[in-house]
Length: 214
Length: 229
Image 1 (cartoon, helix red, strand yellow):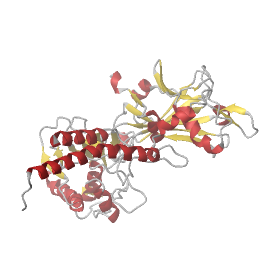
Image 2 (cartoon, one colour):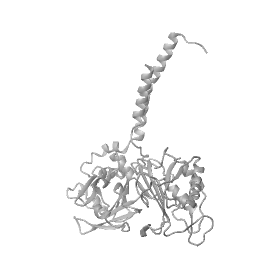
Image 3 (cartoon, chains in turn red, orange):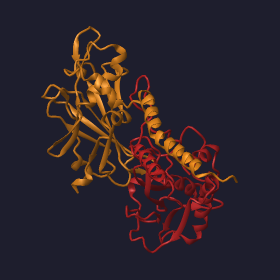
Image 4 (cartoon, chains in turn purple, blue):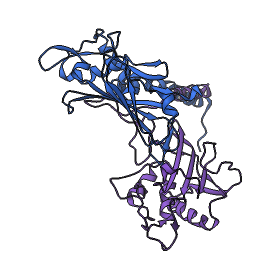
């Protein structure tokens, strides 16, 4: 008998929780607001933050064109976010499964290093990270690094125009996690990374941001 | 540990069952008590059904702040016409500065329809589309005419083209379409994230956000061209 009541109670409470996303409250001028504060994350149509939720670590497959000597830099960049979140957020695997030589929506999370086939219309972009989600859950991310128009360095630039690779990767991995660009607080997610500039330390804002979802 | 007798066991079991039985009622009562404090906007819409003739000219300034939003949203329709798609909105009347009853389009002749791509971001930025054009009363006199979007033409254009001009059937004026943050490909699904009407004094505006759209209609309004491929 008591089991029956327990089941009834559970079903009742579950049915109460099955409603769709709830929006934020109204105010004097608005009928509703975003479901959540953005906390530095991309938001869906309901204003919910999009992230990988529990589906971590994100497994990123490294395309064969990505230089092997830069794999350790990739891991170092990931470690900044791992340390801030207190958990392993990324796992990298070198892969032959990637059929396309550039980013493609194919259910794989990929990292491409593009030396020739980078579109002319995007020549000012050092890298591009595509994010795909359904509801408030990310399900694919593809990161491409522009080596056609930019050269990269790890310790010391050889040209004034060289870009610090670890700084760039920290920024792009932030996008992979669901972060958007910031402009009002010191952050690795500023949209512009200057030539020969090192920005390889997470700020207080970055650390607070990542804790909102991970 | 003290061992309970059979009657005591039964009493304890009955108490537990009673408490469990009361919880759903307690939750329901709590829900009813809290309900009015977190009413969703669609429930408030009933208050405004009185204005079935779209006439908000006698509505107080305080009520007007939200009444016009319900009037616009209750008339939302997706209009597909030849190669274009657009959103028709509910029309309403208001009182102008001279005390005359006029349509919203007379007082607010310019409008922006704002859309965001659904489920995609390029480097953290969600693609946006803004359709700017004249506010025109539709032929049926109860809607604001849709600003048409020629998706087929857009999808076959290079990504570097971020501005399009669309002729309008009802007027010699044209609508302009602007894109932001479209980088790798043209997104196929677009969610309507709001509208902004500009008065003759551009500082005088009326607007609805995407969250307000969802709160009244219950879900986002999405133009989905992925189904056509």
